[in-house]
Image (tube, rainbow over all chains, first blue to last red; front, top):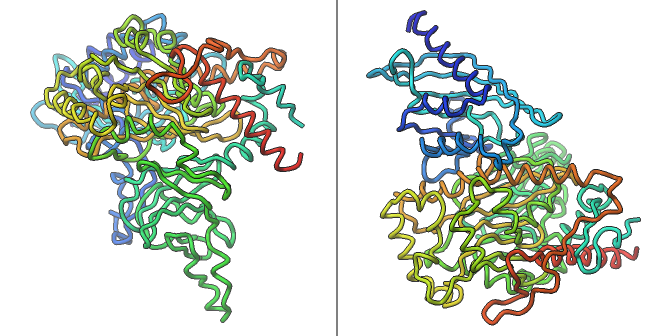
Length: 179
Length: 430
């Protein structure tokens, strides 16, 4: 990871965020690998394992996530076709959750490289997504994205994105957005 | 004092807007609807072993549901007898004791008080048997669905469900291995009155092709609903919207789960498993039961079920204008590992806080809450008169049956609602 790579990564995420804020969902789907997995675990308040008390593992976050395994119920576990369906629907006159559309502003920060292998990079980032609709329906979404990006031409395509929202009970109008 | 004639007309066809927003109406509901009826708590599969527990709500009362060492299911209020703190702080788990963090009073999984540490310091002995967690006096289950009731005198759960059992059976007894709840529920809040999601899933088939036009408009499933859809009211307050498939229809037209996004995947194992289950359905639930292809169900007052999307949900009120909505994933117990995720996509793509359909429903319910807050409209009730008088008995199905576009399911619900409050006030001597 050097400064040039970090700059490229940062510019990719900023452009992606602006694209989504500008409601250019079709353009956004071009940033996805056709094998993309878009996963959004749900969270719950797990009982802590008293056998682990005094250890770092006592605070483990993983046990609070309902993720992709078949004994869990995540919020979303989607492939390219489903993401495309969501992107297409936004322009539909009768998509009443999107018409009139919301005003959104995505703030991407804490971009962190974890590791690279065969042209694929594991990258973390945080987001704040400000969501405003109608007169005063305003919500702030906060969470982390855990991405696998594949190098492609001058930029990247998204092979996997795990979106970890910080909520247990979802207090925003929908988590069907592109985070 | 609330004038009930200014809430719901006798025939249920007019529902005044204050019913959805008035704090005083909500207080009556808490007392006489949620305080007197059976409320859904959780599924037996979530409490497989002694010590297993989940947190739940009955209206806005926090509840612990647990399996005791005696193997029985117990439900009690999650509040310490000493200073009132919650003694269970996780959503689910397994525990020998529920311990209050404040002074360490500890309770057994049947709610009885096990120890007061301060007694030792004082050399005293408090009367522990009188200081257990407050119990929910009635707990009963039907086909794994566990309900509780605050009213000791409530009729049996069996009688309460009545002919709704026929419709529940058509899903819950369809699979010889039974049904289980998998994972944790999804939870989200809505700025809406608790009754809107409830009446939507009692039988509001009519909104489908319109509110959900961009997904459902002009599809074969709408045609199938037009042809075979019925609204069934086995008992006022309960409801089942179903398709009663014709006698000459084949298994692929009737099978549970063979519609929706997962069926489009073309996965052979998926199709084969569901067709095998359907082939056995007649043996489990009879000829008519096996022809039922459900849409949505409601058990009075606030339990709902989405058939094809395999989810149970409860609309928990948080005052007149807020809901905490909880939604669990249901699955036949013997569903093979290879297709569980596919079955899950029928739920999470369409429903839950990220669901394509759910976000439109949630939008409609919260918009309705704006509409009922217009005081100038207090003399203008909402119209629930569609199809009035068109329902009646059916040669094959129990209850009052009508077109799936008739609103008799909602009229019956609001009549029951009014009756419950009238009865409650009468008993209270008001």
